Image (cartoon, rainbow, N blue to C red; front, side, top):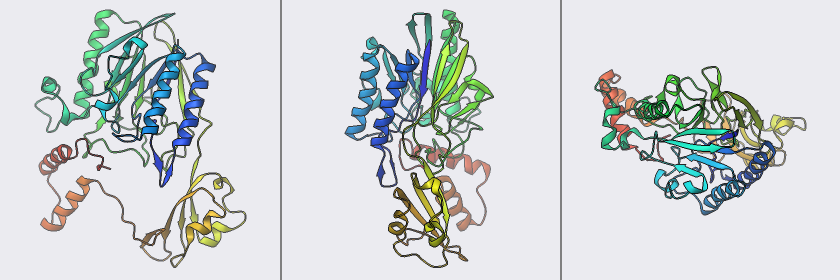
Length: 390
């Protein structure tokens, strides 16, 4: 059977002030054509369907188009909520669409449940584990947190869900299985556009939690990558660049899974969307007739190194780079960094870093390990469900 794995669609996303909706529409058209050309039987979307918990109407309509078009083709869909999604909204019709072989899961209610799907070459057991906010865990999940844990962690709730699933798979003697997980696996490569799942490192999970499945479709990190050196545990990455750090080629994953769970895995490059580029130099260097030809068709962030503030820099650069989005002025010979509007730019810090810095300034020492653990737990509770955490 053929499976297509993608994730982190982030419908409703903008890059700076530029909406990416048209590019996302182009991706959906390409995705459906790819499903047809590869004979895909199951579409897997590993979280962050939308860019925010209350998405724009046009983004909801675009996701509906994906589901309707897949159903019309007889393609099964399993999708999960990510940390950007409102789990209750994404899974509002959870169970009602199962009869159409469209399974959309969010929150704790069905985390770890096994979905058995029948295909012409035999059954496939699917485990869908959406993003699980540890602080929102219901009382019945209390056993997932051991006495030695200072704070609830993603590893504890994810591990509990996957342990439940593995037990169920063992009971039914599953021949092949697919786990869909939205999480940050320790040691993975990150980009600038991923929202931190929690503060203080409690968002990391070990790759050992993912053992025991024929294939693990991961979501959350935007760079395509394999985990633990195996083709069968991987992030598909985003279908489009969502920050200027996302310069790696975009792709989806096509899995050909045999009845015994053996997988043959290939990536299919995504040919739609506009690439991103970061360029640096003085205004005259960047406007030279032979400067950065590779960036002309890209969304561009320009860092100017002139000695003084450059007036109308963005409009001047737009003559050569028509898709320029951002201008930063790193004044030569100065530590001052200015935005395109002349306002100073300060390096963003996480809430934990801000609190630790404040403590150090007032008290004169860093937080102790115990104080740091307590503060981490408090900040996690404060920012549960908030979009203000970087």
